[in-house]
Amino acid sequence: MQLEQLINKHYNKLNENDFYVLKYILNHKKECYQDSITELAKKCNVSRSSILRLAQKLDFSGYSEFRIFLKWEDKPVEVHNHYFESLMSDIESNIKALRNTDMEGICRLIKDADRIFVYGSGTAQTNCAKELQRSFVSERKYLSIIQDKIEFDTMFPDFKPEDLLIIISLSGETPELIPQAKLLSIRGIPFVSITNLKNNLLAQLTPYNLYATSKTVKVENDRELTAFVPFFLVGEALFRNYVDYVHGKK
View 1 (tube, rainbow, N blue to C red):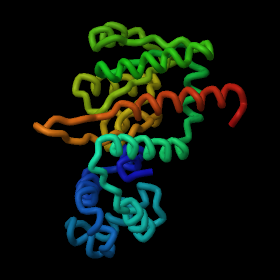
View 2: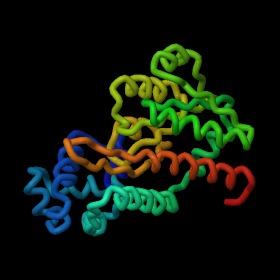
View 3: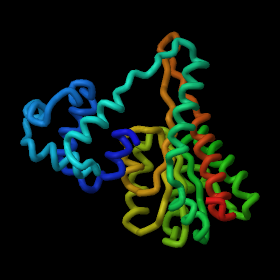
């Protein structure tokens, strides 16, 4: 699990001071794992106990264990100059992460839900939603696609706690999506977020989050390439986990 995932997981435990320290750590990882707790506290202008409490909020026994984690996470990543190799690197990263992702809670939600809705916050995300819908038909789980924001807003008052929503968003920060996600949380309507691997608001609003690693690479004329293959891969992994769950393979 990466630091961004830990922040999302324990978001509700963290205060403004914690976020200030985490922002510094995210921007200076190499320096931080080389620093003692006293040195890091001094650089962040906080007390040693504040750093210790932050480490414990993130489920580390203390600063030493947190420091080891930061060192492990800062391992150099091979840089590829070819766009194809960049895609292969993304796919390999996702496969490695998915092997260590526990989806049992999400599978239970899918099995028990009266109705399941899937919303993609863009064209490519909607295509991922359609593929997820197609996969689950074989298990007699019929997912309804929410086509756009207008449809989402129209349907919103009719969602119930017995329903389940799956929301697919590249950034997890789509401005028009966050208010609805907050209301879903307040109303006790469960939803699963599928987002790129980074600290994002959508993932913070639900304990049921899945991550796709898709690094943006630049090409000539400042154009960017972002692969959506990892999102399809996460969706397929969710479906296969569900099949194992329902048929007692796990």
